Length: 498
Image 1: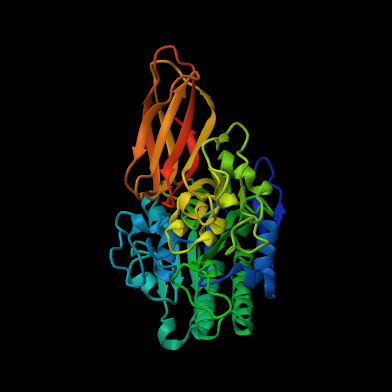
Image 2: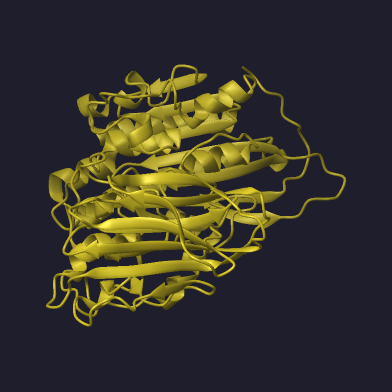
């Protein structure tokens, strides 16, 4: 499946000098540059350890590209392990869709949700695709499928990942420089092995520095391509999970085990951006978007920013007040609603934990650190800042009973007689007599019940139809959580009126 290359055209966007990425101009008469992609997977890589290491190639990509850090799910949805992590990266959907919950790969749904290289092959069989791995199960289990043109597999478990990573790098350098892959995935696994063996200390940093050198070789191979001046390269580096600090290990719900990142540099990717709305599923969407291929996935391209009003609160987030298990320096909550929104706390008691007195706005890390192991970690379709009503945590201080608070949206323009849809992300756990109502009010009138939750609705995207009555021109959406006394919680994100 060869693809012709337009030679002699000048590149738009990226040019590589050694291992550094720089920008060049494009004459108005130049042919459109040929899209190219390299995704490098580094297993079990904590970004904080990268910052502490001597990793000039990763540092340069971060300085000139977009770096989004986020947390993955944990047991209850899937282990914070390689099987689920690489499946999320490859497919662009979360474990409740791709089916991989642990390293057995039982329940995999790759036929329904194939990897991004396979999707590119389906979109255009002329694309030349390449994957190289030394965790062999990524090929034998089909995480990166058989439709890929060239799959190179080494067995790092048998021969050792130091040797296997070197072979992977050598093969990839040769193919990137001398052959013509359009889209490539290259996996390096030694960082994970070292962290399991000796934790996240000196040996781990040394392994990171070696993989950074190998990344530099891959980037230099791209720059050495004879057709490089006519190509538009997108480079993505990512990881499947983190490691407990300092002892190493992963699979559970610990914060450092769940840490991941997506780092991208290329045309249209903002230099130096540190978005709060990144998720691990964004790798596949970023890869497909570079080639103009659309797919209904859980991810979005890293170049596309969230328009959710809650995310505008990120700069104003505060440190803890009453919570004790959250680091004192972590900024991750605010009681103040974004512009146009409001919170009704008039029915709330005066006691309880300050952070959760009525609807609050928080982040994955802050909220899941409040109390682990209760499925807060698995609100996996929220992004950045989201709204939370948490009667369980509110009750952890005297007076934290009788939770009753309403989150109110801005007033939206509507057309009488039409049907609008309330689209939003919800993560809800039901217990006892608690109630969770979705309401609408037209032109300031009485509330109309759209939906009452009476069972769990975890990590779900809702789309509720609402008929606009005669004479209505404005609509407010309300989320009321009440009759809750040390029960569970309700999280809401990304309300959109369609």
